[in-house]
Every structure is written in structure tokens, then in C-alpha cells.
Image (cartoon, rainbow, N blue to C red; front, side, top):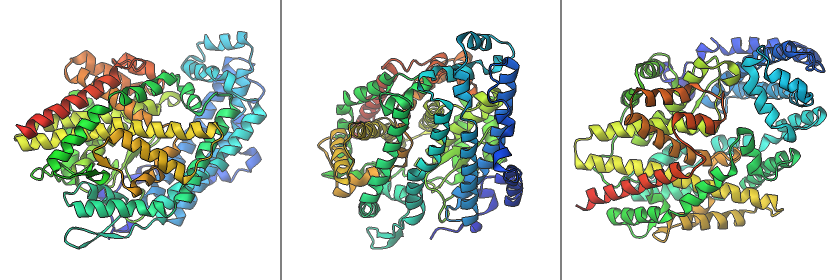
Length: 602
């Protein structure tokens, strides 16, 4: 039985007290905003409305004021969402999270006039501002706004779009509520007939056990829960895709995909060439399925057999403290500054919320704001996959650490397209170190198989998700409604294509689409696949290079959003406008499969 939050030791919890010493202190700061009458709340911003033609000083004062307010609001929001995720049934924290979310939407509405007014300036005035020394720190920020001129609406319509955002977030929030709080997955039997509690965290743990009875029971029962709600979950997913279509159509984008990619200056060819490259090389994945079938001695394979280690002897289990030390050691190639900062964050400053508790948000993530720690949520269970999750999230957090340290607030964040590079880069460093330290054939087999599984899950599986996500959006764009049966049929066909003839896709597995939270994030998943491709290329470059290659990579971490993401990666040493990084990652997967085959069969 999972512990309740109050039973978790303070040293195992993230240090939210560094943001606010108590929830009451958070409420006091929140009340400094809400104590002001709503019509007066945003006067600091609205005093500039209609005056952006008056010169660079006015624009700079507006942007300085805008970001000062935004920084305070993000600080309030970050604390509330971290506290909310500790126990999503806690009414006090849930209420605070809702209140700050509403306030953030009010702020978005109150500032929705800024971009249209800037875009309504004459070209002469825009040229003046883009060459002004006064606005030098905001030139790229303004450039990104100007790029969206044809997709920006008049002020009154932008205000309506801002209002709509509050209403349209309901689909994702409803999915999170039913998935993370309402669902009780019950208990399942292992091969000894003993009952095991099934939860989001234990589900992943059971899939990695050598106990096939437990794997099967956990997999089928977990998905049957979603099967019982397939109509509701289908409508939630359809609603969020309709939301994306509404936003794309309103802003005059030809497709939802273009709406997602264009603001970041990412060519749609990056998406299509990823899918094409993976589809052209699926025989490599099918070859691995054949190897897995032979070694496991299981015919036929099922999806619940995909994550079980191929050998028993090196089923590595590590305490959290051991995992943290490994992750810290593995980043040595990035230099002392990086390594020391990570050590301090993980071992002294309590960045990490370590263990699962009842009603805690599932999964793992890195989160924070410009003036907070880069916090990490974990549900650590001690298996090797959790160690790599910790390395992954530490990569995100160190990206935030360097970005916030070296960029002003307006450039301190980074786009998701870059985020998954830093995280998977760290996973690759960890695997390299563990392979170097391995001292037996069996351990090498185990670790190589882990790396293969990482690539399978991140490159192939996420590309399959990307295909499915694009398919859903295309059908809605063509006025074809999503139904549970259609989604099951399409998801089955994709699984059959990707896994090949060696793998049975159980009826329950056809409902996997219903449990993937990233389908609510608007073309997010492809970035895992492009991210790992870029990360492997950069890791190879840093590990086999010298000081310059390391500094190029650290420069990438320090860049934030001060450039477009593809340009940032190119300066670090990888060109994502070409298919080479993806093809190289697939080639790496193929080499690892051959290496594993040799070790297992010779």
C-alpha cells in the first residue's frame, strides 16, 4: 500500500520551502494580486496600450513591466503545481492550482493586445525598433512576434482567443483527473498466486519482471480499466484535437501540424522525414523482435513481453542514493561546473521528489521557473529504468539551470524541441559509463539490451505515436469523427506494422492510445524521436572530441530560446534539417542488435 504524503520523509521530498516557507506565505503573495479590483489589476500593462508607436523607450518599459509581472505569476504557479502534484486529491492545493491558473489566463487576456499592436506598426517603425540599441535585449523576442504577423488576429479577436484558452483546457484536465486520481487499478496475481497492488508506477515495474504471469495480468488488467471508459476517453481526445483545429483555423494555418511547428521555425519536413526514415527501416525492429523471441523462448511474443530483461543474472536494482551517485558520475565528460552543480542540486538542495505516494502524479518530470530550483518529480522504485529516468530528468533540470543562469528572463526558457536533446544526452552518458564499468559478458548483455530498449521506446515507439497523432488530426481536419472503434483499428494497424509478425497485439492493447497523456500536448511526441537522434550525435561528438566540442554543447545548454531551435542545434554540431541524425540513430540501433546477437549466440 502506498504511503500517504504526510508519511514521506522530508529529505525524500523536493524543497518547495525554498520558494515559499509555507502555503500561507504563498496565499499572502497570491492575495497581493487578487486584492486589487480586477479592472485595475493589470493597469501596469494596460497603461501602454495605444502607445507602442511612441518610441523604443515605451516598448522597452512595457516589456520590462510585462516580464516582471510574468515572473511573479510563474513563481506562484510553479509552487502551486508542484504542491498539487504531490497529492492531486488535496483540496487546498487543488484550489490554489486552479486559482493561479485562472489568474494566469486573466493575465494572458489582459496582455493579448500587445502582439497585434506591435504588428500594426508601420514597417518604418518596426525597422527603427529592430535596429534600436535600447531594445537590443529584445530584438529576437520581437523578431519571433513579427514572424507570426500573418497568423496574429486583431486585438479584439486575440482577446477572445485568450478567453477561449481557459475553457478549452478542460479536456486535458479531465483526462489527468480520471487517469491520475479516479482510476483504481486494483490488484493482480503473480505466478505464485500472491496479490500485487497495481498502480501507474507499479505497472511499469511489473512489465519488467521475469514473472510472465504477473506481466500478463498487470498489462491486461491495466488496459481493461481504460477499455471500460473508452467512449469517455475518446471524446476527451477528440475534444483536444478539435481544440487544436480551432486554434489552427482561427490563425489561418493550413493544418494543425503547421500551427505547432511554424512558431518555432521548424519545417514540416523534419516531422515527415522522421516518420519516413523510421518506416523505411522497420525491418531492423522486426529483426530485434525475432531475437527477443528466440532468447526468451516465448512464442508468440505479446506486448507485455517487450520490457522484460533478456537475462536473469543481472537484473540490476539500485537504491535512490546509489542511482543519484551514478548519474552524477556519468556527467563527468561535461566538466566540473556541470557535475558540481548537479551534485549540489541532487544531494544538498533537494531538487528531487523521490518516491511514489498515494495520489501523487504519475511518471516523472523536471519543472520549475526562472527564479526557482529546477525541480524533479520521480516515482522511484529501484529498477534500472528508474535510474535512467533520473538521468533523463536531471538532463532537463541542468538545461534549465544553465539556461536560467546565462540568459535574461525573456530567453531563459527553451522550446520542447531542444528539451529532449539534453535529457536523452544524459541517458547516453550514463549508459556509456555503465558499459565501461561492466566486468562480465552477462552484464554487458543486460546493459546493451537496455540501450536497445531505450532506442526502441524513444525512437521507434514515439515515432509510432507521432504517426497516430498526425492521423487523428488529419481525420478531424477532414471532418471525419473519431470513434473508439476507429482509434482501436488504427492503433492496432500501427502496432502490427511497427512490431511485425512476431508479436501478438492483444485486444486490450488496442486501448493504449487512451492512456497516453502526451496526446493532449499538441504534437509533442515526435520531439522525443528527433531529440534522441540529435542527442546521440552530440554525445558522440562530445565524448570523442575535445574542449571545443564540450563547450559547443554547453553553449547549447546556455542558449535558452535566444535562437530558433534548429539553429541552436546546428551551432552545437548537428543539423536536423537533414535526415542524417535520424538515420544514424537507426544505424546505432542496428549495430547494438548485431552486438547483442553476437554476445548471446556465441
